[in-house]
Structures are given as structure tokens and as C-alpha cells.
Image 1 (tube, helix red, strand yellow):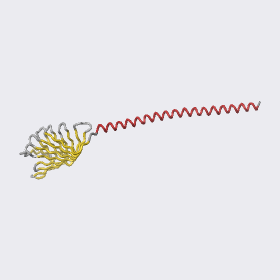
Image 2 (spheres, one colour):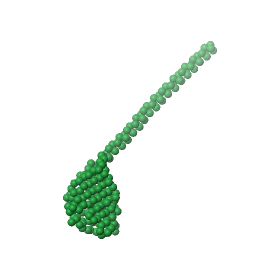
Image 3 (cartoon, rainbow, N blue to C red):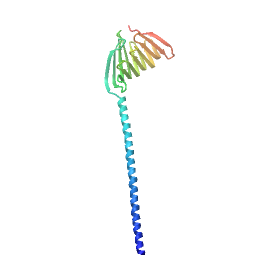
Image 4 (tube, rainbow, N blue to C red):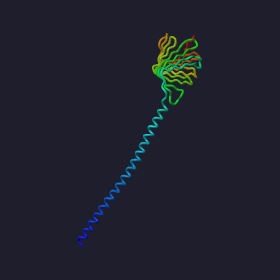
Length: 209
């Protein structure tokens, strides 16, 4: 009888051990399944985030860049009836404004009705091919008859018929050298307004004859 009891106990131990192993395997499979699902979900979210970021950068780049052209030249007649020629070593379309061009190494010629020529050059610039407005920036050099000037910025407003030169303006002509804050050329009235560094305004008539 003792022998049978021992056999019964051994059998129960084997059954218990088998059940315990099966339970561990079951728990392992459940945990492993949840981990894989979580990893798959995490990977999907991570991949979507990367895709959104990449698409955003691509679309932003498309929106802010345009075609690049080299050795461009534009010509026409402004509202004052003066003929002009605008040249640049490089021009790029603005991605947001179709009619706006970003220019590098710019040269412009304004041919006035009295046969005088105004020449302006700069390192960079902007040109609006709809309004014909122009901006010159960086090492601006201007030449007109016997006068020359240096500045950092010049703006030509076709609708206002004005050429405004600012930032470290230095004017040289037969009268000498003048430092100014701003020069305003009125292309219709043939006048020049000068704002000096001492806030004194001087008005001079341009000799277009």
C-alpha cells in the first residue's frame, strides 16, 4: 500500500510539473504576443512621423525655391518713359511670389530722354517683372554723368518714379565728396533730395540737359 502511495505521489508530481511548464509557456506566449504587437504599433507610429516630417520638408522646399537662370537680361520702358536694361549673372524665381526674381551680381542701365545714362551695380538684388520695381543690395555703385556714388542699398520704384539710395551713402562729383543718409532721385521732376548725416535736407536740381 505504501508503494502504491509513492507511485501516486510521483505521478501527481509529474502532472503538476507538466502543468507548471505549460502555464509558463502560456504566459510566455501571451507576453511575447503583446510585446510584438506593441513593437509593431510603435514602429508604425515612428515610421508615419518620419514620413510626415520628410513630406513636410519636401513640400516646404518646393514652396520656397524656384528655377535658376544664368546670365539673364531684361529690358523695357518705365512709367517715366525711360528705357532700362537689367542684367544679372544669376536669377532665381521666388517660390511664393511668381513675379519676383532674386538676383546675384546685378547691373542696370537707365537711358534717360536727354541721352544721359545712369548705371547701377550691386552684389544682389530683386526684380519684380510685373511692377518693374528693382532693389539693389550690397556694394551698390552708381554712376551718372560726372557723378558717382557708393552705398549698401538702392531701391527703384517704377510707380512712384523714384530712385532711393540708403545706407552708408557716399556721393562724389566735381563739387567734392558728400556723406549722406539718403538720396532720393525724382525721375519725373528731375530733382535730387539729399538727407545728410546731420539731418539737414538739401534739394538740388539734376542737370539732365
